[in-house]
Length: 229
Image 1 (tube, rainbow, N blue to C red):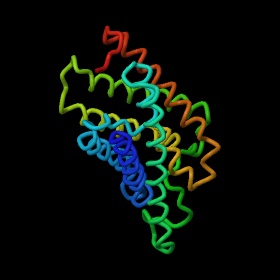
Image 2: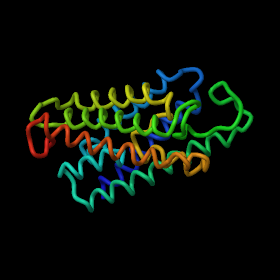
Image 3: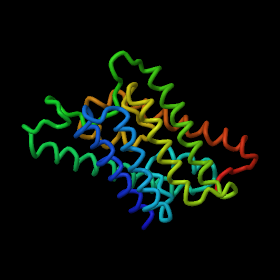
């Protein structure tokens, strides 16, 4: 039970703080700043709950561990449920916070707040976004598999590499669809922003396909059946 609670709390803070950076300060810190916030939050969480649950805080990561043979189907379901609940609570806190001061100029701009939902940005197509989600998740999960491989001995530096990878993919992906690579991160804000549901399938299919490709690729390049410990 502790690992499920850790996943829920961790995903809550990922959404609250990382998405919060976009909602509250996006125009001031820009894409680079938002990407950095996503990365820093994950670095902190890796060192906080990594030894408890592995700090997946992402159904795509849990899916990768499932097909890599590193977690059971029962645990996978428990992790995903906890992540979705945590993401919803985090988005709820952010929504509540914004709703407390409707006249406050959040992030330096006025207008409707969308809680940093994952939706196609102007000019982007569904195919472009799906391709981006697959490729970026492929890279992100590959870094996780490599950094946590006990044979490579990265140890305490794994969390840093994983956080940097999340920051990097967000910097690249935000201009396309606000970057998901995490179905839970997309689900939470969408609960409070119904307009985001139209693109939700991209934020689920893309990360899951990318995670599966990453596991297959890692098995080849690592020369082992599982590739991760």
